[in-house]
Amino acid sequence: MRDLKGTVAVLMFVLASEVLILGADGAGECGKTPIGSAAASLSPCLSAVSNVKAKVPLTCCARVAALLSTAPRCLCAVLLSPLAKQAKINLATAITIPKRCNIKNRPAGKKCGSK
Image (tube, rainbow, N blue to C red):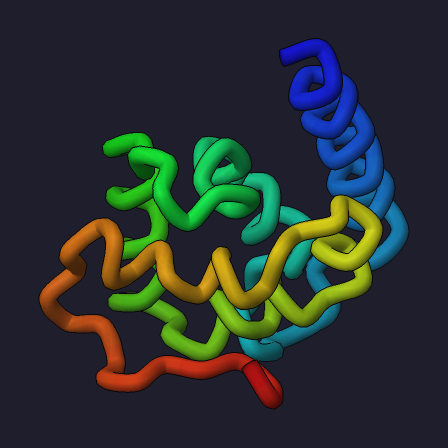
């Protein structure tokens, strides 16, 4: 539990730094939302990205569903970002969250990069 709190603290610091450094620099994979802000909005998912058998929090499911409905490519952009790598997000587990949340409008066979 202590390690999770430390990871969350580091992730939030990195995300806040990214938002300050990058700002809103036009439309990208996440629209006009900076990728750091999109990543921060997914912080309720942290407990579910390291264990494929962990129950996904309802808040996480709601945020992933909202992200997929407004900017579907943003989820992969967040998961493939340097922020996710710094936070040691397990991509193979993280991309299972839409299915684990039973999100109906998820793209079939969704993959990010080569995963």
